[in-house]
Length: 103
Image (tube, one colour):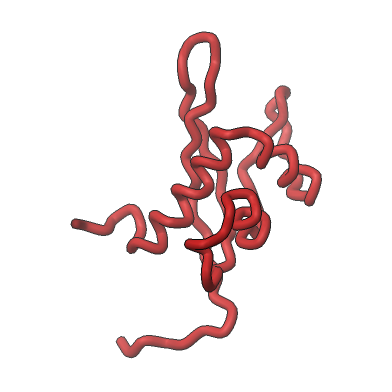
């Protein structure tokens, strides 16, 4: 297949987060739609995440009810260091060929 130049490339993937708790880290996931950014390597973490995240999904509240994506939700999630780490890892893993890439 020939390489296709796409003006505004996006992708959706799953971000894995290790959320701290009194009983040790708990593995949780969320879906995230990213916009591919030119020059992302030189951006600060929060600046990069705000510019690249288009949508977050599969997020629930304390009662298990779905939480809709809003700018306020993104602000709340970006305050959590484990979320920033998981989101950044998800982006760069896809840039490196996805979860199925081999060394």
